[in-house]
Length: 297
Length: 281
Image (cartoon, rainbow over all chains, first blue to last red):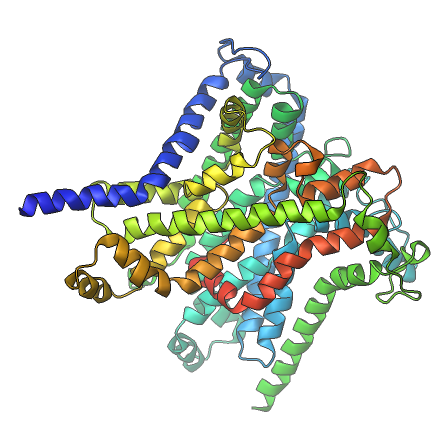
């Protein structure tokens, strides 16, 4: 009787997770297995797949200059935009964490760009703001500074995308703000008793106690930034001279403009390997700088 | 005390300057949609000679289809995906949070793992799969994954619901069980009513992310009559040699209205939802 009851329970549980399980097997596991296979073929959607061994990978690493450009642009974008975004988010969260009047209003205003930032609409706005006759140059002309073709020059094009990314620091800030609220007041009181100044309190109390949240935001933003697509696609179209040719753009072009599905699959696995390596690296260093309260330190 | 007050003023000043700087391009955009073409390159926020021409002309700028069609498409698609995701993800989450079955923890750790999986890895083979089903240029490549608790944000929504359900006292379930309720009744009568705040959060994010899923729309939807607003805006940009900025801005501004309105009506839930679970944006 008891055993049967238990058995019924296990079946019922699988009934509830069945949609997810079916989706996971059919739309994640199976495609991933297929993708591995595709990456060793010259599959083009128009013609059947032919096994070509490691040729796609060899071509990517030795002949494809666009791959090198996109890797450089993506890496630069990730390594510049993520730290800038998180530093800004943390700084503003600390200011906002003081019990100020109107804090609710500021929080809403600062979060707003994150709300709309991923849209095609904002990409179009950015295209104009940093254009030759755009808002930025207009404002610079009031200061008698000569404007630039920000989007059209390889030295500055990536910068406009980084500014757009940093502009959307609101969602990271909201997470920091929640973390700051969790820090018990006693820690600050103890620091004050010890005569620690503002800066020392920040480095010895706030930063260590917030480090798990910093790690969380860092991983989340890094993974997300590696996959940046819409803004680069609309604002800079990957140019000029591939200076903003994000990895997702390269993958899109190969798969959906040239229908080189095999080649694109190989590119996708390389991207996954890169993201996994960077994430693993972050977690490996985390032992040195992330402080967990349960440590008892 | 005096020092504290002075530094409060300093904080206000800093926040006011930052807020103003961040909102300036947006406010300029709001003004620009009412500007005639001659004023477009001015940095003024308020138009000197306001006009509604940008809206009336922009609305019909794409031949054969008004922007009404694109708004209709995007709204219907996003609303469907929200409904389907809320049902599927909450059912799955209930299974993980309240049912006991072998390998439960293993499967749940897989859910968490897929949270971090870049969708670039599956996009090519998924496209091939959907192509073989003849689903290209239909809405099925969006609806079916969401119905299977996947799609955009699926794993995240499961996680969010599980966290929320774990916070609901188990005694409620036990009491219902005593009254002879089966597990589905516990889900529908006890859990769902208490899950409303989480449902609101999931609905908004699901709506916003799908509204802005430009990449997905672009690869799967090909006939202009099925386009979403984002695709229509991109088409608008590409179809003109010299961009009619006023009209583009007007239509772009309209495209962010639904998400923004939703946000302002529900932002208390939303910000709390982000804060308690941590979330990309």
